[in-house]
Structures are given as structure tokens and as C-alpha cells.
Length: 431
Image (cartoon, rainbow, N blue to C red):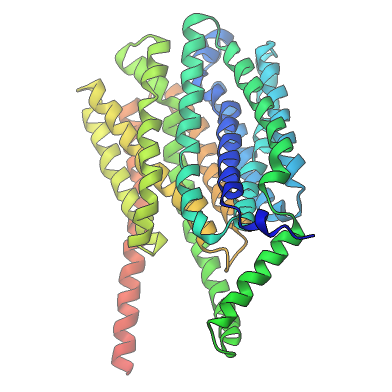
């Protein structure tokens, strides 16, 4: 029997948003504890930067590939148990590091950790698109936009605390326990928060019936034609934004991983202090994720909007290269601004677009594809920047390389705008 009160309940929909927020936020304790502790890992095991960076890259490679695979397959999953199992498995892997697994094996279990956690985001986006009324989408996007910065802050704060008072390994134990609790909580609360297939079908039929009352009989035919035309444009859009996502995650995760080392080496800070100061970066990232929502309402073209944010990255990273030897606090603030722009782009690609385009493409699929493309960039940057350090290139040179990368989307967007104007002029001449 269909429970109409459950379907339209604002309490249920708010509860679902909160549940998704808590679960996904907790996953960052399984994702970023290693990155936050990378200086401690290097010192404890006596390894080089590229060796430690390779572990982060194996995670991002597995996470990115998993995002694409899970984006395609997520509609077939039993999400109640799939997401709960993902967090439990990540718990076991984090506890293995706490127990002192040899360094040579960490990259293998961290690969499994990345693939395990990769099922979360695309599934969550699909759940929200199926179990929320459209009027709740903006609210869900804003709230979930804080998952990445808040989860990153928690991971780094927890690591800094344990580095200061005990051992970096304790952070893996604490994070694992929190994920275990959240995973079990997800399984217990899932049925209460989401709609089953019959309830989803009923809600969809009701929405379709209401829409048809407001339109004439020819409208469905027009919609079908539009959808067929949009399909090819969506493919082109995904290809362009996929490239942009690679570059954005290259910037974001490369810097997030190595900021503690940048501060420690560049300004001779104690390790725990460098980790704590790193929290400034995701704090500003939270603001960027929030700003992406009103910005997307004013600038509808996602290519142009993301290019504006990339232009901000170009200017900011360029300023970091110029001021690196001048003032630590200025550099730290600029690193936060880079994360602000990066998080805005990330939120646009993985939350706003998938939900607003759900009538054109499966939300979980689009989110998984763009997120997966992004983690290709994260894979390259985590190991690549570590490798560049072993060559003694210097951080200023690395910042110049990052600036050059961020220019690519800006130039691409300008090129598209120019091409469109030329095309319009040719059409006007023909007319």
C-alpha cells in the first residue's frame, strides 16, 4: 500500500538530506586521514615523498575508476546495504593501518579503500533525485556542498590532534570507528528516509499527471524531440566538463595533499602546527561550495561559469608563486582561495548539474562520470607533485606549473564563445 504521507513528508525529506550528509561526511575520515598524516607516514616508515604520494595516487585512481563504474551501475544497487558495507570495509582497512600493516602493503589496501568508497556519491545523488521533491534539490545541494570541506577539516583536525598527543595511527582507529557507526546507522535508517520503487513510481506518475494538466496534447511529442537533440549536446558537455574536472581535481587534491609539507618545509613549522594551519584551506572551500549555487542561477552555461572560477585559480596560484618567499599568512590565505574556487567547480559538476539535468540524464551516472574524471587528475597530481619534490624542483616552480594547467579551461571557454559568435555571424549573413 502506498503511504502518501511518507512520500510528501517534509520531515522525511529533511531527514534524508541529513542522513546523506552525515554518511558522506564520515567517509572523508576514511579518505583523507592518510593525506593529512603524510608527513608522519614519511618519517615513521623512512620513505621518500613519491613513495608516499604513490599511495594517495592508488587511492584516487581506484576512487576515480570506481566513480565511473558505480555511476553506470548504481541504479541496479541495493543502496541500503551497498553503502553500509562500503563504510564498514573502509573501517577495517583504516584499522589495519592502525595495527601497523607493513608499508609495502598499504598501497594495495588503500586501492581497495578507494574503490569501496567510490560507490557512495553517485548512489547518494541518485537516491536524492528519486526520493526528494524538486523544491528540495537546492537545499540538498547547499547542505551536501559542505561535506567535502567539513569532512576534510575533520580528517585533518583529527590527525593534528593525534600527532600532537599520541600517534598518527590513532587517527585511523578513530576515523574507522566513526565510519562503522555511520554505516550501521545508514542501514537502520534507510527505509525510513527513502522511497521504495512503488512509492517512486507513484510519485513520478503524480508529477507527470500534474504536468500534463498544464500543457496541451502536443507537448509530449515536443519533449521527445527535445530529449533526442539534447542527448548529443549532453555528450559534448560531459566531454568538455570531464576535461575541466580532471584539471580542477589536479589542482584541489594535489594542493590538499601537500599543503602540510609546503608549510612545514617552506616555513619550518612543527608538523602538528602545519596540519592545523591546513584547516584554513577547506574552511574557505566550504564558502566556495556554497557560492556555486547562486552563481549557477545567474550564469546558466556551466562551461562559462566554471571558466570564471578557473580564472580565479589562475590569478590566485600565480600570486602564490610570487609571494611564496614573502609571507606565510598571505600564502595560506591564497591557498584557501584556490580551494574556494576548486570547491565551487566541484559542487557545480557533481551536485548542481546532475540534479538539475535529471530529466536529460541519470543523475548518478552524470555525477559519477564527472567525479571519476576529476579523480584522474587527483591520481596524477598526488604522485606527480611528490615526484617533482624528489627532483628538487621547488614549490615556486610547482605553483607555476599549476597556474599553466588552470589556464586551459579559461582558454577553452573563450575559444567556444568566439566560435559561437563566428557561427552566429555566418548564419546572419546567410539570412
